[in-house]
Amino acid sequence: MKVKKICCIGAGYVGGPTMAVIAQKCPDIYVTVVDINEERIKAWNDENLDNLPVYEPGLDKVVAEARGRNLRFCTNVEGAIQEADMIFISVNTPTKTYGEGKGQAADLKWIELCARQIAAAAESDKIVVEKSTLPVRTAEAIRDILENTGNGTKFQILSNPEFLAEGTAIEDLMDPDRVLIGGDTKTPEGLEAMEALVEVYGHWVPREKILTTNVWSSELSKLTANAFLAQRVSSINALSELCESTEADINEVSRAIGTDSRIGNKFLKASVGFGGSCFQKDILNLVYISRSYGLTSVADYWEQVIKINDHQKGRFAKNIIRSLYNTVSGKKIAFLGWAFKKDTNDTRESAAIYVADHLLNEDAKVTVFDPKVKEEQMYSDLDYLNSRNKVDNRKLMKAEHCPYEACKGAHAVAVLTEWDEFVDYDWQKIYDNMLKPAQVFDGRSVLDKQKLRDIGFRVYTIGTT
Ligand code: UDX
Ligand code: UDX
Ligand code: ADP
Image (cartoon, rainbow, N blue to C red):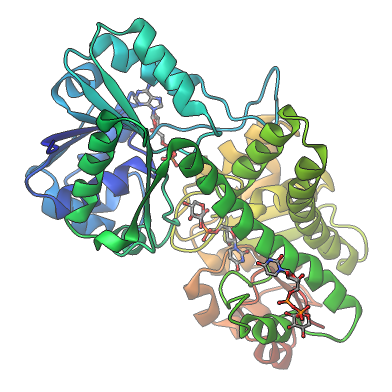
């Protein structure tokens, strides 16, 4: 079977860029991306490509080429489901904030809603593809809903986890390390559905990079990949603290171990802590699933990755407080960066949010500059923690549009995101306008420490002395 029309439910950080690339690479396939959020769809349709709801280098070009040709963004979910022969589910699956599994399990209510919508609208056979990160065996729940609430049409369910990293999403989609497709390998219909999706990716991905597995392996591989990546960051971050107590330098240690081909040199950068929508959520999922099967030791092992990450964020904040003579009350502290990594406007689980919250609890005045994150987003991230009321959050924290203004009159500058532009700032000018002793806390090890020290700054970097 050849896919002619694709529908993607969810126009977020995953659905938007992924569908834009599929449409660009497959001019013979008509792609419709739907979302219940009208404002988001409006932004995807904006003439001015600077207003796309997702910031990703290179995304604007891809959208410009495909939009209006074979790529469409709209809010007509039902219509798009009816037309399509393949439906991707790319809706959000945040960690539950209530009830059983609160704080650990994934909240699948949006997934279930999608499955019910698909079942109700479908008038012909469909291939349903799970794109969102989901706990293992979600495909079974989707199948159950589709088969029991549908109109008698047939469904094949595939798992096709996304491995793109934000900030490099377009590169990752264009030239992936691998594409993973899980399906029902035991029936001819299952194999046919998998082949249909292989053919879509086959438009631009070499066949040997397209892996097919059973559905459960595919689902678990996604959680495992993210757990391994996060574990590397927590491992290096744990050692960064040991480096600070000895005279070892974490960057030298990273370089030394990274040359071992069994370890590899990527993902060994010590930082203020990992963030993003996936790592924490996926590990919590893994922990929850392991516990639910009674595998306590397995659950405890992976949970430690999160604990070290929380420790790293807290340690960074505590270090700022200690260096400012154990009190930050009323003191201005400038944050450079709010996004969870550079080259994205996404702030989900960003370390900056937790460090800010810690400092605000101590009555600090935090001023934030981020090249891509909007002020409302910063406040909404802070409000979400529920540590204090909205009025106090707005009183204590301010967003600035200019980095030099953000740093003016500050006791300390903290780098929370590794945006390239921070390196090239006029640090002499920043120094001249700060209170003395002027301190810099580089949570990403991006600045030239010696240069800053020569100017007169006191500098703290993670994992070095
Ligand atoms: C190790 C280091 O590899 C080496 O660099 C260091 O100098 C000494 O310690 P060694 O213990 O000789 O070397 O063997 P290695 O190949 O690392 O295996 C260690 C253990 O891990 C073995 O029991 C091996 O069976 C096991 N292992 C290794 C696995 O169970 N799975 C793997 O994927 C790899
Ligand atoms: C991750 C996975 O990489 C991707 O494959 C999956 O599809 C989604 O989750 P993403 O969260 O977008 O992607 O970004 P990633 O580059 O993995 O970074 C995650 C966090 O780890 C960031 O906060 C980043 O700053 C941090 N990190 C990463 C480090 O602190 N040190 C490193 O060496 C690498
Ligand atoms: P991700 O990083 O997984 O892409 P996002 O939150 O960026 O997550 O995007 C998910 C999108 O899915 C949101 O824009 C949300 O409005 C949309 N969405 C959630 N449920 C539905 C639904 N039932 N129908 C259509 N869109 C939905």
